[in-house]
Length: 164
Length: 401
Image (cartoon, chains in turn green, cyan):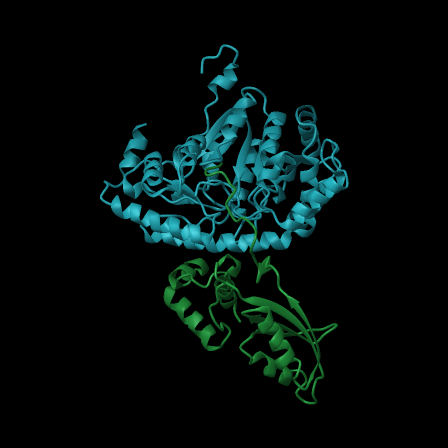
């Protein structure tokens, strides 16, 4: 990965909506070369998708329930944790899965319409998988910071309009 | 001003041209400001936390006049590591209330009434009044975009008289963003050695140097003994409101500055000094992060100006672009006022930084990319609307005045 590619990734990760000509100016390259560079990163699946961070708490009719579930599993010969992780991440309710070091093995983030939905997913689907030894469910009550973005901090510019 | 109690010094002091634009822009809604001379980043949390901790631990009293010794040691280490310059933290480092106080102390410590100080212009608005307040006479040397706002040795030599005491430089420069590279500094150094002059170097933007490593004139051969370095935490560490700077220089000059400092200020804020200590010890990743963002924004805004027909030299440092607006036919003041009223974009007219700033505007790119994109969009509209103006009218007007 060369320096310009890393720079483009840093820029896009922060703001995926910037136009190619804007990015080109920022990294001091031509629009054509910047476009080609971005396309190549997309083709190589370095850029997987362009996501948006939304504060759903501000959406009136948002009633999704989010939970982090600590899962202990028995790894299998040859495939280790990968097989069970794949089985888990294919459920629509599951938003993210991480292999963890420490007290448990997989961290699974789940979303449902109600607490009952989440509880049912855990008891009926997750806990009944062969390799799963135990689960501990933590409901997310409020999001303060997500992927580097602080949710509850006033971002108003506190500077005076013109200064020396 | 006619109050009979006022001193003639205070009466004669001209208010900064920046102040007028602050007043104009402050009352307006929806203004996008490219007029701010400070970072848009908030001081990093670790620095803020260190200051909070110092308060919790009860560090609420005076510090030693020159500042906390551990901070002076870190400042000394900073200049040793970065510039291979050695300053004794006990006698050659002074912690000041912002770089501004450092400049004031330096001038007051060395300038006798009637002595001259050469200032490279366009320059920061405080230099000339500060020299005048000390009873000195500022001698401006005007530079132009054609030479990237770098002064020539000949111009400096030409300005030197029997009364010249010092040359003031600022690199990277507010307002032009020009970085004086090694060869430019050597030219200045040669004249100063030849004419036995002191140099006061304002290095407040040193950490915001993008294309090449910043060089301090004090690090050039035979210059340490005749240089007062002024620097601070405001720009690199995004700590403008903390008002914390420092001065470095030969023992006897620094001790003279310390005398004035102890009688007028006592010491810099204790809380701020604890934050600054953390900044120098653990703040460098944040500086690198901010510098990277400024550099991208600089590239964006300078290219955008060039595309909309405003010629603009590539500033090597600070966070200002200084494009020429001569092609519009407006004076700097007219351009800035019309832009503010018609498009609600605040910029600072270049003439407030001296006559050589006329025909330019200072645009700070210490704003988010979203703000810069909107500012560029509005300025494109403005330029398109006024592109029928007679070009270079300003040049003629400036020459007449």
